[in-house]
Length: 477
Image 1: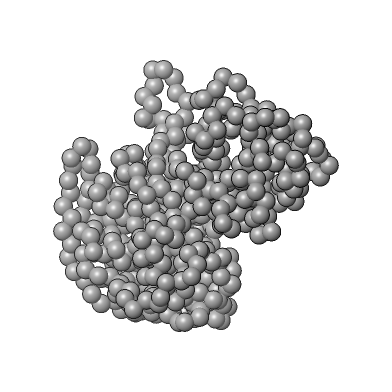
Image 2: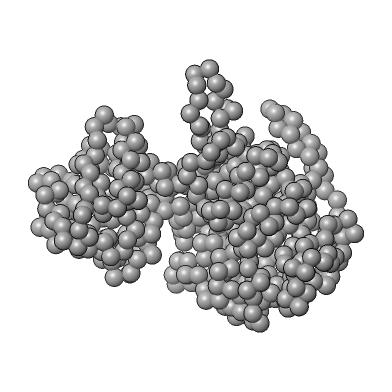
């Protein structure tokens, strides 16, 4: 299969130390760039080299790299698709649209067993904030780094999908965190599935767009809370805060039964309001309520009255204020009864100062997380080596997320068609960075109403509970 180049295209340069967007997107004044890929049974992208370096000493994901220090994909060559719609430019002119066309035919016959409806080919739009308007010579905008890593992982998933009987055109657009500016584009309006956007307002707008146009939207990042109305076409990959709280309560119940639980947070509306999520989840296991501790002074408070004289006391602290959490843990650590204490915290705690790691281990701290990458998993090792061989850097969590989302969506489309959310409950599975346990979230309905018509979204219900062990967080099942 051959891929050709055309002017005004975006080019990703394969280098050893940096990733750059072609100057064409700047000199041409392009407001948006589009990368269209056709996935077919032949290899769209060349396979990664097999002569990978020796195993790394540490099986951990590095932090997001500095701007301009990332390698993405091979240089691609383009040619014009005469049927493609032109992109919009800042000057209002309509230059030719850069599109990749891949030769070859694919057999993907429509089937309808069990209500499944498929078709010969599909169109997918991926909306990510590459922020190409902020690109300077040789350096990518820092705000776009996670999008570039996500796309790098997604491209490796397309390598895998290219070996399957699936015909799908993938249009990658620079959303610049403005969904409304791209929602009128032909590539978005014709899409069977949309992956993105990633910002809060963009997701809200995309949900409304999905309802109007009956198109499936997969949100890979922003975890929405309550959604007005119903939208069975909306898929939320990141579990919501409520789902984190539900899983923490489930973990407490399975490991500690009816031990004393204290919900502790600063007297701030946004923190104490989170108590309600834990209390609601606890109703599944008990008719009683947890003890709630509203802390008025962030520094001067006493933990001793809340620690049981015998047995285990579990503190659940739904705060991600680092100064407060640090003070709280230090006070617990100074208690003569610290060995009777267990603490549950939030995902943000993993990004706090590493000097807290000792306290995390001593106090048996658990945190909830939407991501856990097991370096001992052979599939993770394979992906890491393939990513390193192709791009010259180790994958971070965004790259794993991009790979898992693209591969999962592609396989779901191939098996169930673009209305695959109806079948998500059948496909609960482990992926590289977590597990996908999608279930519908229902709006309240009357007894006579059909509950299936009141699905507000499909949400991933799985949350990893991690515990500090040996200096790093590990899965605590």
